[in-house]
Length: 354
Image 1: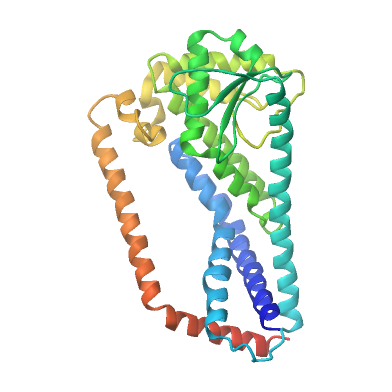
Image 2 (image 1 turned 30 degrees about the horizontal axis):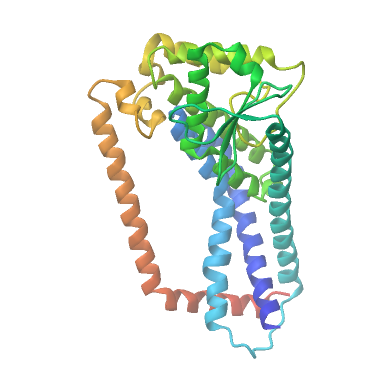
């Protein structure tokens, strides 16, 4: 019974924490999402992804970081306690959430693999200098330009795209995909897919995921557009051409970082043309360096404002690391007391709940 009770408690804690966090953010989510509207695209995508991942992350932290260690450290193996019906129901819900997460990941992996196998069957290597991942040209009815994979990413480009774009447009498109690779958007997309709390979130979960994907595309557009003079107009022209290549009513349906999946591109094209006319000032405020991130941002923007903002961002990252290290040290030093309190709560729940 020792292992069964421990698994029940961990799964019940995961389900309860997930429900509380998801319901709270279901109420606050629309307001927090609207609050990101004025942020640069790269920062907005990070905020939206964090907001979507928060319920699952908090649930894992509570169940795996507190309940499981406290139970293993403090619970006698011969206690002989049995969980009540309420804990069993919560554990069943927790199991359902874990199974849902595994099913979502499996479905995403399967749909991606089917397309990759099809593309690889007709693919030839595409040798380009400075590529961040292996690149392939392939034959596909859909004008695909997509970075696929998390651990070993690959970039696939359809023949009609390579033939239908000018050299500058091809360069802009590949810079867009390189921006996705640098931002690790496929990893973020996989984590979002693994979140099992969509039922509790309701409609807001899907809204947040779509908002994140739109922000990630805008961030990749901005990174590519501001990487070289004239690239914004080239990327806008490439988007229009690729959109016209899409068969009527077709959608890519790929959970990966793609240039275009069959959706409307008018807003992205308008944004790129505004960037082409106005330069980084079209992003508003300090959006340039933040939207670009990585190397090349301050150079593309020019001026003297990039360095102070870059240094401020580096200072904030160092401060966050020191804060996390300090919190970890405090937790490690007080782990005995924390586990004692958590185990006391566990004992109270097991004995008092029906």
